[in-house]
Image 1 (tube, rainbow, N blue to C red):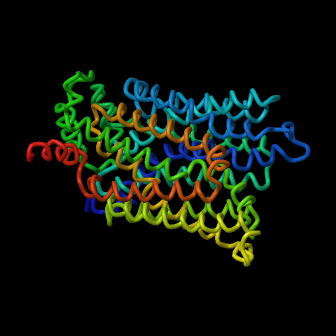
Image 2: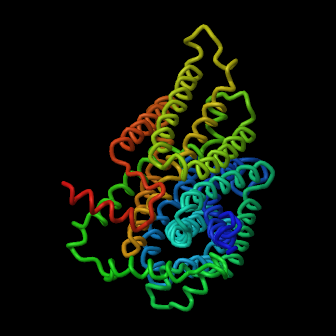
Image 3: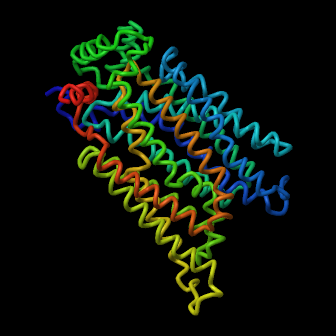
Length: 465
């Protein structure tokens, strides 16, 4: 019997290897965006070069990567289109390593700023290149599993940084980021380029070799090559005209992507994970802040893994609605606890006897986030985008997520002082619940559909009107 009768994980093992090689860059990205949580706490300890770091400097260290992430997103749309998805990841690796080493050996806060800006630029490029690469190498039956690995890898990066931050000084923590980045570069350089991109560039022999590597030597790749060519013929031009902005296969994915990316960030995830150690210290958790932070980061991995399993079974839309609703409930509970803990002198009972509530609430928050609101934007953005527009739409989406992430993270300290922790948590809860309602009315279901069927569905919905 042919290899195609084997279980998908066996027959597509090289596809899994290629996807995981690319996802190592997202692990590094998770480390970039959560680095400030343990690092800035450690910087203030005796023996640190920067023990006098100010709260304003801490907010800049936390949020600067999201500024240059926007630039990286914009560059990546062009670079991945011209150089290829895998080639872009190889190209960006050197700058990624340099950014980590700059932070590790920085003699001043200004140099740390420079390192964080460069790391954000690299993360912004990878945020576009990795989803585009994975969706183009993934067959329909495991596309949800592989593309949901984006958020899983991000969660692993968060967990690694917070866990290592409990035992390593901030400079050695940055060096660990350089080591993992180097490992990612060594793996991705051995992987094939995206076959659809190669076919678009008329490098058919390389595409055939890539497909045989990904699907197995005994797999008949002729039909797949023809399907890719047919899809490309429907999107011949590389340029975008004014008419394209009225094309539902362009503007609908753009609108859906924008809402998904904004909704993810306004649920507060980047701000909460950037300041999670401080949150546990401030709201009065009875659990050690470093340990509690590691537990929450670990829960993110578990939730995202479960999401990958469920996504190709229950569908994207249902998971998204459940996720947004549960996020709202968890943040509402955390807000109630924070409200009473900051006004303990006004009440007859001691709220600190319930010091386990912050940990449980944030565990529920992170698990719920990882089920849907976290991974689904990075699953659906490349899914719903035709290959002609894919790099551009993903780049647009990551610009939106970087900009909204920067605003949410940088405004965290200001809003905390203005609203209190409880008011801030309730604000994030309102946005999360709103995203669930929006998902119910507007989010399409892509489970089990080929990429071509998804793109055609946007046109059909217009034709029926």
